[in-house]
Length: 101
Image (cartoon, rainbow, N blue to C red; front, side, top):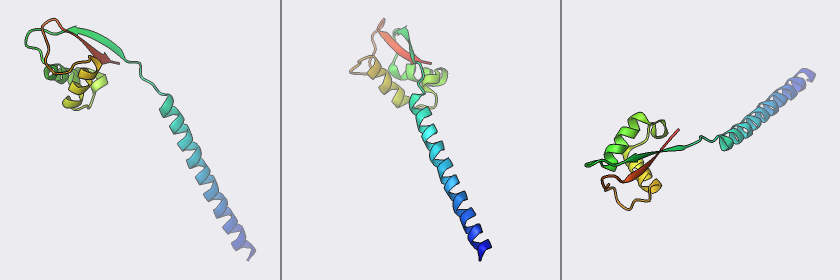
């Protein structure tokens, strides 16, 4: 009877320690995630004749770590927001800010 009770207590304590480790790990993960920030810089580019946001987005999806694994449509939308553009049309010489890391 005593062996069974000791074994039961040992199992309960192991479970408590396991749960405590999971809780502490989750808290540490949440803290690290919320404080990790990537510094974003902006490059200035000037539109050439015939440039489109779509073409710029395609290029940036391949060459810019900031847009790694992002959909082209998302990149176009993001560039429009960053540059306060109401449409995707660009004029020759228009300044475009492009984020990068």
